[in-house]
Amino acid sequence: MNYLSFVLREKRILTFGLSFTFFSSFGQTFLISLFVPYFLKDFNLSNAGFGSLYSVATLGSAAILPYLGRLIDHLPLKQYGMYVAIGLLTASVTLALSWHVALLFVALLLLRLSGQGLSSHTAQTAMARYFIHERGKALSISSLGYPMGEGIFPLIVAGMLSILSWRMTWAAFAVVIALLFIPFIQLVLNESHTSRLDELKNGDTDSGDSKKFYQRILSDSQFWLLVPAVLLPAFWATALFLYQISIAEQLGWTSGLLATAFVAFAGTRIVSSLGVGPLIDRWSADTLFPFYLLPFGAGLMIAWFHPGSWSAFLYMGLLGVTMGMGSNIKSALWAELYGEKVIGTVRSLFSSLMVFSTALSPFMIGWLLDHEVAMTTILVGAIGSILLATILAFMAFKNE
Image 1 (cartoon, rainbow, N blue to C red):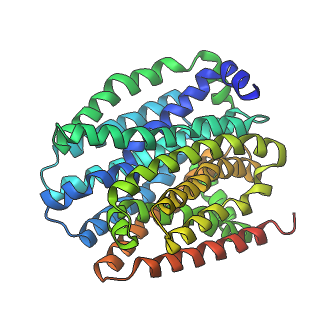
Image 2: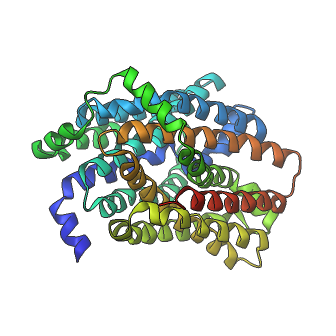
């Protein structure tokens, strides 16, 4: 009932955030991975070749993200949101028209920047800035767009690819963005929302101050203790989802089974995202942060053991728990540690680092798979890194 009354009271601003997390799916690895077999065939690429292309595109978006991401602290939110949506539209059109690997690269760069990077950044920054006492619940509601996209788009893509080419599928996505998403952004926020958000933005910060602010964060030892725990879930999830067909074969699962297991991922992500919001409001994000990686590590251990078909659902479900909690906990944590006024600048820095990490994983896992490294060996390395990151996260807050 708490959630229901909250949603009814703040439905417009919450729907704004939800729409951006939902449409960020166009730049997320889970959706792009569905088109990888077509990319390999039409552009004559190997797994490692596409992984390298995808990594460089993601690295490029990560390099640009801090500069474009911090503009949300200076521009009116509605205007900033329109720029992001137009970027997503341009990316979809470019991919639909791509006839050469160079255009494929440009499209992937724009998708990763405007989808995974800026769409998520817009939603989470707006929620963390606008809400203070109910920040956790607001982030939970807006984050529902991620599992909604993960649950809906694979089914839509599968249906569309059965009757359309992959290029026409992306052309249809562009039409949806142009006719639905962009007009929605113009209509959803009322004057009170835009005034409140614009009052809270850090309009005084010039580029020099931002540079000093970045330097202060980067010189803080707590920052470096937090970084591994912030980056590793996206790092490993990107690689595991991009090469899910190869992984399924090595672990004795079918590709259809693993695709079906995405339902478990989406379901647990929804439940954990909604469940963690009130916990953030009650106990604070810094209290919860060191624990959020534990389900992810448990999921990797299940995959490493892979005792049967049911383990695919448990593996994906546990990964979904961490991904559902993590987005909300991290966005709230930046507001707690650095304040609401500069949250756009802070989030753009961490988002850039996260995108850098997701750029490395496709190349690394693609190279390992091409060189016939066993998936169980890769999983052991992933489990070890998650354990280390959890220890460092506890150390970051040990004196608080």
